[in-house]
Length: 161
Image (tube, rainbow, N blue to C red; front, top):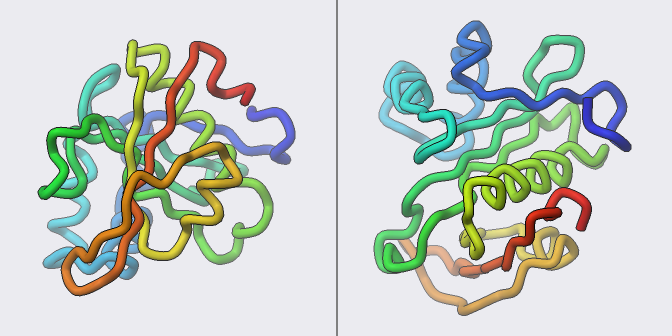
């Protein structure tokens, strides 16, 4: 359980294969992979303690959100690595600290792997990440949309920040 977020547990997605279809449906609807099946196949490509790795937030055993750590999420900036990517919280659970908990957990896990700098890009959540201590490196256009490229220096106690 995550302190401060009522009854939220965070687990490796690979340990909860029964929730992959639900999470794949969310990811497909949010970011439009070729199909839900292709998205599910992409999500099961996960490596505990490596890249990519995926965590799912659960309440009462039901998925409420997901967050990933991947090598590169923005091809023009692949010299920056690794990336926090694909943070998604189901609409029924937004505004309750789930996104913050997933982000903090992912930061702490990345720091435990020896990652000292983490990157992300966002189209519409720059303020959310700034409140969590992320810094905007640059703004650019990607696939016709303005995005903010952000970074966060990690410490061993990143989850407590």
